[in-house]
Length: 175
Image 1 (cartoon, one colour):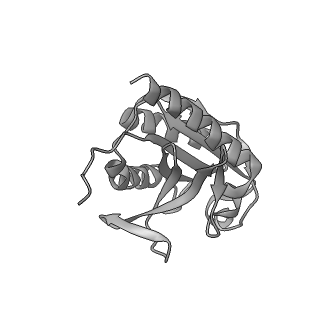
Image 2 (tube, helix red, strand yellow; image 1 turned 135 degrees about the vertical axis):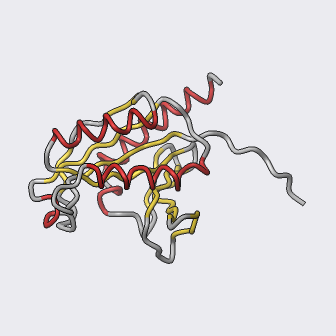
């Protein structure tokens, strides 16, 4: 019989897809109120990997990732996804979202994203929320799975997550 162990806290990350930087600024403010200090912000990148959001948000689209200083219990991910959905609704205009807010977390071994959509590689958490292992850490870098979104496979995104992992490694080392 295996022993049940308390899980180490994980690093909360948020990915944004947006058109207007003012909307991004408002979203970050609301997220700070809920999750505390932001300890990392990536550069703003062009988002050209799909037209999925263009009808709702317009074009050209941008992408940014942030992480938070306070580590979280991994079991909080479903509630965090519900909170980010509420923030998306608050920032909507005429029933259309103006920003996509994707929460997830990383630890030393993997990057997990939350979703409201089920699929063969997603695991149900609770309250309508699923988890997906999007990247795994191997050979000193995050690595994609066959199902990983195309943008998450890019060198720019991998570099961002490797950097956030370094921040996380320092945090857990200093605990």
